[in-house]
Amino acid sequence: MSSDKRRRARIQGGWSSASNNNTGKKLPQPKRPPVSFNAQDSKEDSSKQEEYTQFLFTGSSNKFREKPPVKTITEHGIHDISASENGVSRIRFFPSFIEEKEADRIFRTLLHDLPWKQASDVLPNGSKFLQPRLTAWYGDLPYTYSGQTHQPNAKWHPMLQTVREHLQQSLGILFNSMLANLYRDGHDSVGWHTDKNPAIGDQPTIASLSFGDDRMFELRRNPPPEENGDYTYMEHVNVPVTNGCLLTMEGALQHDWQHRVPKEYHERGARINLTFRLTIPG
Image (cartoon, rainbow, N blue to C red; front, side, top):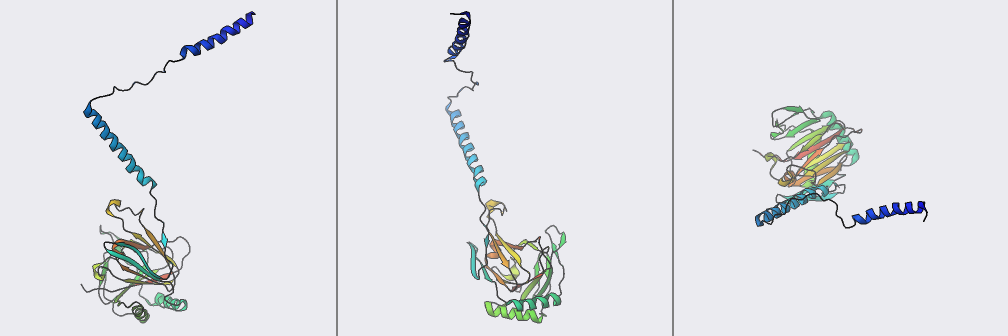
């Protein structure tokens, strides 16, 4: 064998020998604490494992929780949106309750004639802020909400009297008071609230007529105690309210839901909303 071949054989043998010498040897392992065979320790470890496993399960359940889809009501008719121990929450919706040409005439008259003013809401801490809309009140009795009291105003505008009579005949319900809201443009709004008030009874019917430009009327269901006031996963319902439409809120709706008309950030014209109710003497 030539010297070169013998040299290569020695090198190859060296790599082969090193490989063979490591066969069967274990790599160093990190040191583990000694295993306890004490029955009490074993029981505590098992309990901790159960707690940890349960925590992981509970924590991950909200991670995959989905919001319910927003429902939109556009169809004429009766819509029961929930039921609870308080009763059924019902909406009746009539998209063309007043013919459009007549609705336009009513809008122009009320916009010009009603004594619109910008009132202030009073917060629980006593601070005040101007409402982002104008209002007008008509009623045989005083009515208090959001820290302010509307005094009786029994001199109904003739147009309002005509609308009220038509509404009473159609629904078979008497109304003796009405709060009008004027949303001057898309920046005017009313925030989340409920009309739950002893002055209108436990389960009132509130009839809402719309005139002028379109807006979105939104509702959200009140959360149960375990949600800690979080509305994220509660049902939401939207109703596009248009010129001449009628929407009624009935049953347990003021107990179980809130509603609002949100701000809109594209061009909107003025909208008048008339909300009729029956006020009960105190």
